[in-house]
Image 1 (cartoon, rainbow, N blue to C red):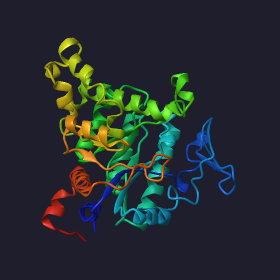
Image 2: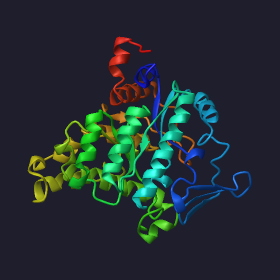
Image 3: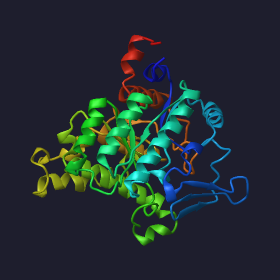
Image 4: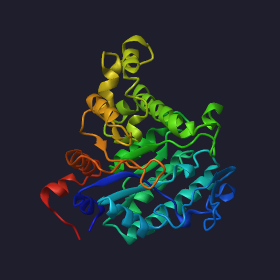
Length: 345
């Protein structure tokens, strides 16, 4: 059966679930990644000069597919689309090492999916510092490995509206697959961010939201959605702080000369938000309710950060779960199969 036909049968689909893969360790040259002391009380994970202490990936759902499936069963979750660990996007290292890592990662992830294709599928890691290499890897991952789309950071070393990225966006449209953006902590393999982010986990708690908000604004103001109207882009965590800033972002459309002419009217930014897809990993029903009032319901998806430190509450209202699942099937082109009851060998 195809991935689309398997997705069509799912009653719940989680599109925010990261994986750590033994087969991708030591595949980025001196940058690692590397696991250490996983059987001790002091496990660690190294990416370049960055070391994450106290997190044990081995022997848990991040690395063990059977443990992942058992954890999914425990919360009645049918299906997950697995994605790269945000610590290993490697968008700022040399292109040769990044390209080698992405190929090794995608091959290793495809092997995991092949063990349980009725429960998991995958997004592809992509070397965005080399646009042509990213295009080649996306085509390989989709056409040869059966992956469902690309998965990249919100900060890739160049503005997301850079015209140099247009061939990459066009490739996503040509392959008819979505592109998912998710942040990474500043300074992992690229430039360090605001030093205030280094305390209280603010790189995760506020830095991620800032990156997502900037990504959404850049894609809209930068004309990416205008140049690629058929491009499906999904942003994690309901677009960061985009809902709270909607008044200012909309106001700019009628007050700032740099706004594209097609967006120079009242409410243009809010309207453009409805072109994007968002996962609903927000942890607060009030936030979700407000966000739904802005963007509607047709492009919202279940996202959990499964087994992560901030795994989302999984006791989702049944009506919402049906909505999120139907939307995911549309995003991954499985809706018509579900509607027609068709199956493929």
